[in-house]
Length: 213
Image (cartoon, helix red, strand yellow):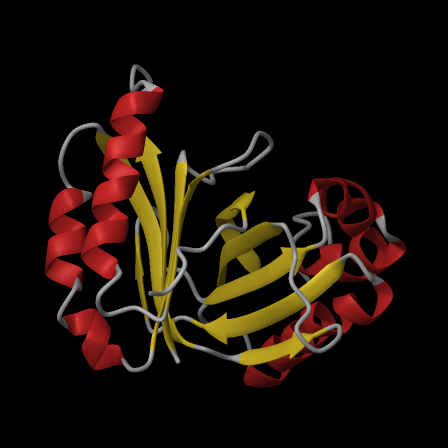
């Protein structure tokens, strides 16, 4: 699968009606070609996560190639102030149980220092993928390497999860020892093992993908 994430930052004065029209426009453009279309307002608590989260999944990259110009044109106009995003082949994925779904979709865009040794990057990726076994609130997950990034940083990875609910993300995930005692070392500037640079984008929304006809 080929996937696209866009975190859309709107001008501060944008009202809900204008935002909703923008979301409807993205859905209408993407729906004919995409297998999954999730376009929702972000929830309170995001960090550099934008005001609208767009996640699209296509059978192959050519399906996005036929869609990207229209989507990008729409997202280049007012009231859009900035867009952070990534395009990528679906990476290492898993589910907690067959047909598991969550009510909250979360995505993390991050950049790993470009000269980081491959073995170190692989250990970092393994640590992220180890988290779901300790956190039952994560219903499904995927870690991917970015093919093309846009926005304030040259994103290297996309770390995605579906959570059972918002409490599972805001509480156990962020506060669990596997996170603060093990994974955070890769992000902490006071830790010699830090490899994640620049600002991260931590964004989440209600997991309400467009129903396929």
